[in-house]
Length: 377
Picture 1 (cartoon, rainbow, N blue to C red):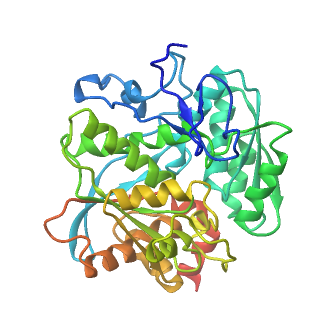
Picture 2 (cartoon, rainbow, N blue to C red):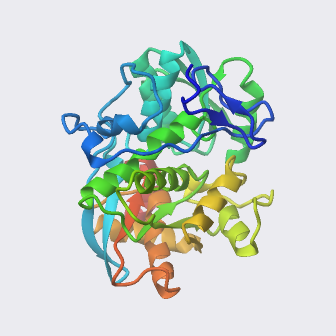
């Protein structure tokens, strides 16, 4: 492999060639791709109506992609929290969440590397996404999920042909169980695998293109493990390196009050999150007590001059209802960005002169049983 090929790097600084199946460094830490130069608008393949139109930005070999048509979700104008903003409904991806962006690229890389069996752990959306793309790639998938996961997400994974093991306990218990099993089949974790982030970063390219090749002032995202935070940070940084934008947007994150380790770490000026137990939250997709890439996520928020806020549990369902009344049906994990936007406006992080994009990560159909209490309760 030529020396100029981007390498994977662990936290100790050791570099690894990206052409072998590997999900973490020899030091046990997560891997990141070395910074890439980014692409210009002239390198967009406009004949492709999916996120693969930005393929030139991906550090992948010339292999047939595993794609279900992910990406190209719209930007919809809304007035929320007294501000004119754009919302990006990622529920329009093939399996109903933004995770399809990362799964498509990760599974494409793994199929090219000859992986035939894989293991994934998930609170729902990641698992159903990896299950779908594994099915499309002809890869045998096994998903480990919390026993409390929304039933619709489990049904989706099983219908895609994946084996599903439900594990009692917290989302962190599930992640720990997956690492224990990683010796039995390749661990294709959406939280660990560096190629997953390469897919998620394409959301930044898409926002840039749909805003007329400009960057927003701020992007508001729900954060659990933080792949959207890192994806936005990586994608917009590449666009700045390529000369397409002159500044990166502020990354503003929301977490549920019942599980907000990143918020606490930012408030405390800490480099990593504290290990502690958190109560159950309706925003199950962001209920990650110990994010694998906590150091990198925290640094990305700080580097963007971003901020974080925690949303009270009793604000989640009203936010779902308010968004639904504007025609957009999302799960509580996604809806938390609405009360977060109000908090960010009150704190002066966004105002009327800002171009703000809110990323709505997953469909309300994924949490239909939980959301029935809005109608019945």
